[in-house]
Image: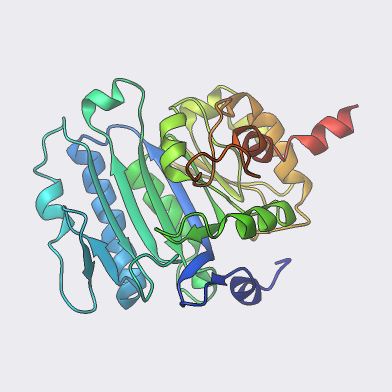
Length: 315
């Protein structure tokens, strides 16, 4: 491992004078899946969520009820998600959020949030999304590896694509205060994931991906578009797991923030045809703002940061 994760965890945390945690760092998993309107996919999410709560236990401290009011789980219980989710008709969009932290809006390395699309939305090309945070060093002493857990969850859900690695977590309300710090660490650490999940879900489709990460998740359908799993055989250091019709591609033994091996660049080069060409802002934008560091074009270049080494090598 090229960094001491327990040290970098605190180095990248941003707290304001009031004690609000504006920016944190976590192990981030983002998965995009179809058929979120079906009982099968809803049950898959519920199974993952039940396992997540068992793993994190009392670290899950807040949720929102269906009116978007906060519930402090240290003080009171909330209705079980399955009680309202499974009976929903397929033409209803659905969502839920569970997170950690001492305050409801704090950036947290504990998060399980889902946005499931209705059947009519999926017909327009929209995908459902699940976002999951773990504390950065959670799997160091846990009895199961992140790879084993992910393969099991991918088997349940069969997502179309996604990614996992070291990423930032953000305050849910003070969304402008963290921007400069987050932009700076993104330039310093190319292995860090920076994402705006709400904008991302509006732009990505079943055949376009955000990019690669430490762990990249692809359906067989997508992988076949770039030559199938055999196209990856030349990438030294790449590990591949199969979960039915979904593949987990891991670019290095451990998540890395800097000094990334050649495998990242080789994988990005092979998957380049799948990268989304859409533009979107990865951070919140204030009213009347026009010039911010991470604008749409700058973020697209950042998503394509692993292309550059290959292009320079080929010249």
